[in-house]
Image (cartoon, rainbow, N blue to C red):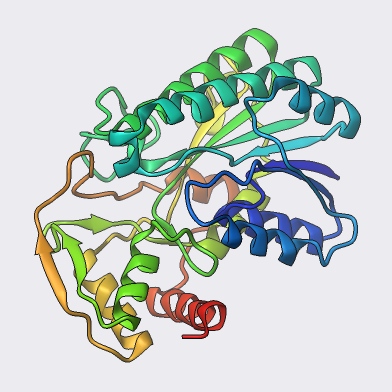
Length: 328
């Protein structure tokens, strides 16, 4: 099967491409290698994928409409997994313009390219952040009208735009709301990476709202398993199994449905590293949600899967990778 992945140099994109290449699929990537964080990590991820001689990453941004149209026309993917985005809740407070360009304009360009070059299934990354001020556990059918960050607002806009395209032009589309994905090869701006770096350096970690914050942490291999199973769960209009009544469109939570406190997450990291952390207790930050917890009924109904990698196992895998990558 021919699969195009946007954001192949990213954390989830690399893992998905690797899984699909191992399964024998024909995978092509698109990634601009932007400097939001150290491009060396992105290039290292691509180098890992380049051991598969059939893999090609096209270095271009989604804002480059001509390059995107050319790739879609030449490769003719059957499935598109759109994972490229400008991530980060806190960064979006200071640099909102980049989120409009990457997330909204880039996604619009992709939708236009898919309209001109139809695919069997368009799969797009969204986020638990769209639930904003909603009440957990979050279910896909509840309202998401109160985002707490500009990042969340742009991802919600992408969901709405994608629904309109699915309705108007018939492209079967699945929006995947990821919940706090972690694991090897993760981004340096994510909590586990920042905490590990500080602990190894003997520096204190900044812990925001440690007593109140709870997150539905989801190990990356569980996320990849869910995505691969969902590839063949193509939505059709009519409201069946979470699909839209008006369009071949579905929103689905990808999470374990078992949130834990941030303090327990840190304790697992301390145990895996073998060094206690010195903590700077900080108040909650603007734009941050106090709790994320997913209702995963729909994911179970569609795939039979509930992400279930134990926190201790996932954290140990991250630490093993971190030590190897940084020679810690």
